[in-house]
Amino acid sequence: MRFLRLLLTLAPLCAQVEFKSSSDRIDVKIDGQPFTTLFYGADAPKPYMHPLRTASGKVITRGYPMDMIEGESKDHPHHRGLWFTHGNVNDIDFWASEKSQRAVAGSTAKKGPEPSEKGVVLIRKLADVKGGKKSGTLHLLFDWQDLSGKTLIKENRVMTFYPGVTDRVMDFDITLTASETVTFKDTKEGMFAIRLATELEEKNSGKMRNAEGAVGEKNVWGKRSPWVDYAGTLGGERVGIAIFDHPTNPRHPTYWHSRSYGLFAANIFGLHDFENDKSKDGKLELQAGSSLRFRYRVVIHPGDADSAGLASQFKKYSAMK
Image (cartoon, rainbow, N blue to C red; front, side, top):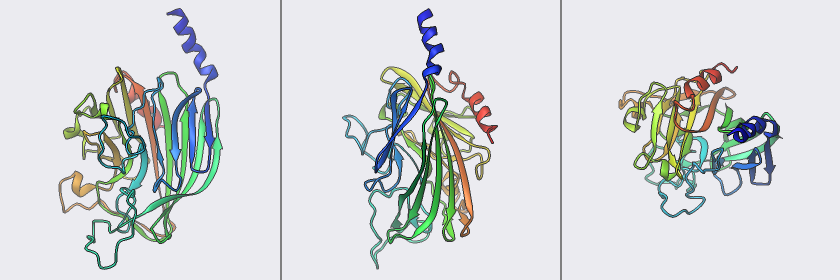
């Protein structure tokens, strides 16, 4: 026991965040161990992080469709690790963009609230890669484009990773700037999202809980809350993952598109679904040159929301300027 306490004391001294970048991805190591990889190459119609791991090395995200793992669910191929997009921007779908193809002229594709075309999010520039002992930062610029190559939105994304003995913590600071007037239309299909490992689905061991203490999909989906945690048993270990919605975000606290089958997403735009009221409209218009800023924290932790002290962690995060 004394030896274990000594190891825990010394661990922060050798803590480190390291990056290895190539033409289509960036590998992230924390404390010498693989944590995740950010993919943004030609095979990725949107950037995504896969897999995500606990500090003990357990993979908490679903492998499909990147990895074929026996016993995993094979639905929703656009649910890839962790990603950030929206399902309807000017009738273009950046959410389910894996089957990207232009709408055929004269087709019966639905108009209005249903997107008629797929879009892609392409890397424009890897602005900065900076590892370190206390944190590591990735700064990337992306373009949200239709399939003709026209850019609708320019995305400026800064991701900060922190070392730790028990937790894996990462911050996202994302600014979207409209290249032309765009409308984020009302749909539940969005926005900051994670698809969890099959073992963590509610039919297995998982259970979602929000900041107000509501538990399970029935009480969490479509509700507003500053954070939600999804916890269960993975490989015999109790683990959880939380998403924090920063108080400065538009329309804070966010609504949650969080499903019992492992989808876990913060989305401020899907009011007519979340409120079950077709008279509601959560759309938001952004004029050319105007910006929206979104900030989120992801905490991967052992145990559950209480043992991880998520309420206290969120209070500290919410105070960050």
